[in-house]
Image 1 (tube, rainbow, N blue to C red):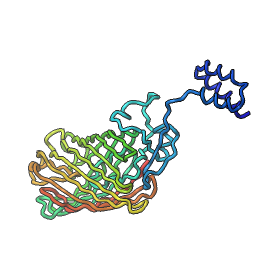
Image 2 (spheres, helix red, strand yellow):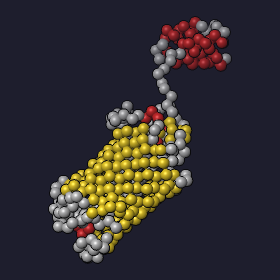
Image 3 (cartoon, rainbow, N blue to C red):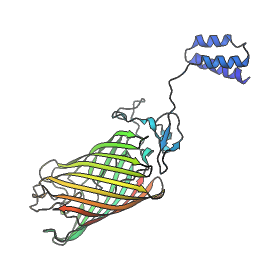
Image 4 (cartoon, rainbow, N blue to C red):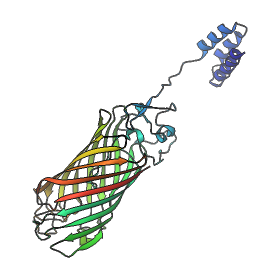
Length: 371
């Protein structure tokens, strides 16, 4: 009886697909013995070109299997933290709308690379290559060398809220600079004011889940909306294009690098090239150690202040003698993941080499919510 039910179902399926000739031949064989009927059904059903899609995810254990719904990039896969091997590494994948005619604007982070740890230092320019939706509270305390002309010693603090919104697995909106700055320099009155706002777009050029490799590009535009009391809000804005890459090694170690430029729309601010490198290693399932290297090289002078030093990644003084100055720093720290949505990080940063900068040392603390 079961064989007859299966045969009738197969006939209905073939009729629905317009295979009336095959269905008719199968009906003629209904008087055959059950074994022959089953064989006839197997021979009559046309083969398909459907390919089983396997999904894997790295969330601390290399190559952990993930249940696939059979369609690559399905919402159920992403919600469960599964990235499809066949998601594609094409430069155009994710550029065009999907088959429904609309972009997949679910705002969920790409969970296929959850083993990676977001860079902590050089927070404005060091861009994570993943497409993620996250809010990150940022606190920075930086001391100023006592030998700095005009400013003397002192320190400043930054309180910020960075944001990123994943439109899909390729596109994301980023806003990596904002907040409040307190400046306490010995040589000038203490000041406080709003930082400039920087917003931009990021696109994942290569998304190789199977090999845990990412390559992204994008830009930020820093608006001149901040307070001049803390060396913000000057000039006509600044463009910050970048290229960022990430790679996993041995399941529990990750490398992230970024290169880019700081290019003012006018000559008020100084111009610079920047690069950063991050290496993290999983110490436990939730705790990661990290080391980061950041470099900044000034390639053109500004036109605002006749001083021989610049302000690094956070303050652009518009120094008329900035060209040729540089800063190279190293940071040590760690990240702790409370769960898949919440994590915190801290890093202590010192200069390795510097010429004409106000960097003595820096402590960075972050608290992130990832959607």
